[in-house]
Every structure is written in structure tokens, then in C-alpha cells.
Image (cartoon, rainbow, N blue to C red; front, top):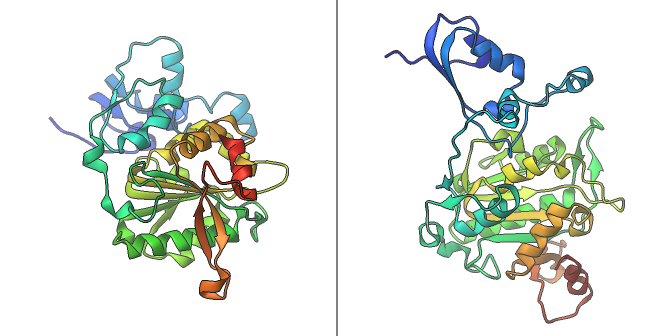
Amino acid sequence: CDVVASTLSKCAFCVQYACVVIDESAQSIEPETFGAMIRVQKAVLIGDVQQLPPTVLSTEGKKGGLEKSMFERLLLNKVPYALLTTQYRMHPQIAKFPNDNFYAGKLLNGVSEDDRSDQRLQGILPNPLFPVMFVHCKGDEFYGVSGKSYGNSQEKEVVQYLIDLFNRKGIKDNEIGIISPYSTQRELLGVAHKTIEVASVDGFQGNEKEFIIISCVRSNEQQGIGFLSDHRRLNVALTRAKRGLVIVGDAHTLISNQIFRNLMKYIYDRGNFVHVIKNEEMSGEGTPSLNETSHSSQSEDETEAEEYS
């Protein structure tokens, strides 16, 4: 049989064919999906309603329901579906939080911890047997030149420190991905790391790396986190890493969101919640370093961190 690859918009102008398979259909607006199905006898839609929805900028479009994909609408109307339950990407400990919080514990692991364990995480993570770390960073967010996006210089420094640490442990740049939801922050990180893929959450959907660093950016007294509050966006970011995941963010800001609170507790309970210190004696320039948040010691930062436990 003949197989033709096409975008949704081009499908509407294709000759009639027996079947169309639409990947990432939970991300496509309903009219585009419908247009691709006009000339077919059978349609197979593949997608995940727990990941990114269609991007709709128009206020009228949102009011008209375009943010709900045909894929989601069919599921809500009880159309028969098959659920793929086995994931083959992530270390099981990386997969556990998304599985418990977004998939009701229905996912199974097709890879073992031994398959995804990496000895190079020794000396990077306080508990290297658990490949997820949260770095608590009290940095002030700022508006970019456009005034429409946020950046965070302190988080940029922490990401730089982490990249250097990864490199010293033998982790190459092409094994690392950096995710940040804000374009100003991505520009800062992209200039500093030209050989590392830096992308938005949307840009990383369908992609993966051995190691992922997430820069959350938002840091403010009002605890505003913008579209970080969308659990689907967080789910995509948390599920791109195969062997190791590091989240850099201001815990005091992110704690306003229940899912972030649960995530920080999950990491804290496993010994990989750390906070940033300035190691001026070593560099003379206030280079960031990391300090483990202990369950037993009672310094100011550590006492604050117990709020997330």
C-alpha cells in the first residue's frame, strides 16, 4: 500500500485514501482534525489528553471551544479507545510521580531501574539512586525586553553550574536538554549553551533526552506562576528525561500550586531537595553551589524547606 506523510492542513486536499492516522491529535484544533478526515474511510487518532492541548490565541476561538480537541471530545463522549499502558522511556522513579498524579497509576514500566541507572549521577545528586532533584533557588524574575515574557538570572547561573557539573562527570552536551516555559529565559540559556538543546515545553513534546534540566523561572512574593499551573504542561516537562531530571525553581513561589507542592514533597522525602548557596570563597564571584537540605539539621533554609514536606 502507499503511505503518504502530510500535515493536517494539507490532508484536506489529498486524494481519497483508506485510512488516516493522526499523531498528537490531542494538540490539534477540531476543524483541522475534521479536515483531515473528509476523504477517508477510517481514522485513527493518537494522543494524550494529559499532555498539551491545542494552542488557541484567539479569545473568540477559546469561547467557541477550540481549546478542546476532537480527540478529547470523542473520549468524553465514550467513543471506544485503546490505552497504551507501558512506557519505555523513563527510569521508573522518574515515571512514578507523573504516573501517580496524571495517569491514576495505570502506567507500567517497560524498562527497569538497572536499564536507566547512570553511575555518572554519583556526586551530582545527594541520593543518586533516585534520579530526580529539586534545586530551590531564590532568584527574582524579570520581564524581558518585549515585556511579555519572564527571565531569571539566578536560575540561569544555577543551570550553568549544573551543566558544568554534568560535564565534569562525563555527561556530554548532546545528552542534555533544557526546558523553560518562558522565551526570555530560553534566550538567556540558549546564548550560554549553544551546543545544548534549549526549548519550550511545547518544543519538547514528543522529544526526549538522557538528562533534562527544567528552569521554572517564576519567583515572586505574590506566588504567581502563570501557565506553569497547567498540569498538562508540567506533565510534558517531567516526562522528557530518560536517566536524570533536575528542576530549578523558587519553592516559595511554586508551593502555591498543589501539584508542585506534591512534587517537592515527593523529592524531599527521597533526599534530593537542595538549595543554592553562593560559594564566594572558591570563585570570588558568587558562583552558585548546592547544599543538601537535610531532614535533621535546622538551618534557616532547611527549616523553610520542611514546609514542603
